[in-house]
Image (cartoon, rainbow, N blue to C red; front, side, top):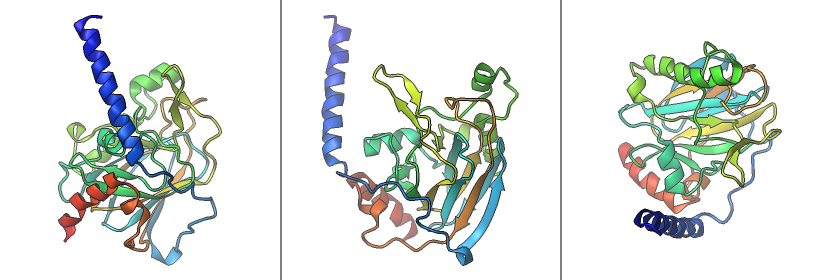
Length: 269
C-alpha cells in the first residue's frame, strides 16, 4: 500500500468513527411528515400571500419569529431557496455546515438550517414531503442546455443572482442553495437518483425565521428532475405563527440545534 493509499484509508476510518459518533448523538426519531390537512394557516395572521409563476423568482424580508410557507400547488419539481441575515448580509445560508453539523443531508420537519457563522437561520416547523436536496444545487444555463437543449431557459443560478440584486447583493454573496420538493437520493453505486412519486400537489414546507432574514426563491426545475421543462406556480405565504415554547421540537431535537440557538439567541437578547 502506498503512503497516499494509507493516508486515504486513515481518513476514511476517521470519517466512519465520527459518523458513528454523530449517529449515536442524533435523535432516535423525528416526527413523521405533516399531513396535507394538518397545520392549517390562520387567515387573519397572514401578512403576505403571493403566487410565484413557474420559471420566476421571488424575494421577501422576514422578521424573526415570522413564518414562510411554500406551497407546491401542482407538484412542480424543485424550488431553490437561499437566505441572508438581514442585519448583516455577510452571514448567509451554508449548506455544508447544515449537513455537517447535523450529521445528515436529510432535512425533514424538526431540522434547522445553519448560517456560515454557526447560527440557526430557520427551523423546519412543518413539512409534508421531507424531500429536499441541499447537495446538488439549482439549475444553471449549462444544466438546462445539457438537459433540455436550451441554455436560454430560465434557471435558478441566474434567478438567484437577480434576486440578490434586489437587496444590493451580487454573485459573491451567493453560495449553494437548498432545493425544496427535490427528492434526490444516492444509490448503492454512489450515484444521485431522483425518487419519482415522492412529491404531490399541495405539498408544503414551512420555515420559522430565527433571525431577521432576506429571502430568495427560484421556481425552476431541479437539474435532476425528469421530464420536459414545465415549472408550475407555487405560493409563498408569510404569516405570524405562535412563538416557540420551551420544549419546541426544532430547538431541542438535537444537541447541534441547541448549540446553534445558543449562538443565535444572544443577537436578540
